[in-house]
Length: 99
Image 1 (cartoon, rainbow, N blue to C red):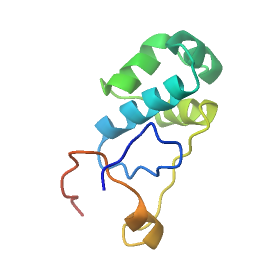
Image 2 (cartoon, rainbow, N blue to C red):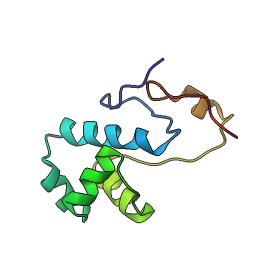
Image 3 (cartoon, helix red, strand yellow):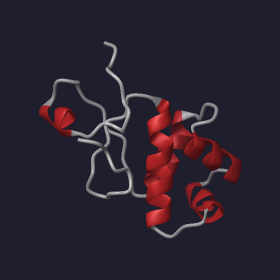
């Protein structure tokens, strides 16, 4: 099963930093927000949001959480073997995980 980050009911299992950006961009576009408006709502710069969406460079965790919250997204953590984690989709092209 491949993940469609644009689908609001899809849980995305993030296995690398590059998977977060497309999901954030899809959610922003789903809400018809321009990048500058979304950045303003999140309290971050347009440059930071652009880098985040494009998987370029690193972003502080507090900034990531602010962006996710402003777009109505959440970050969840749990054991890999939890049934909820097993049910979450992986991004297309995701490889095997390292423990």
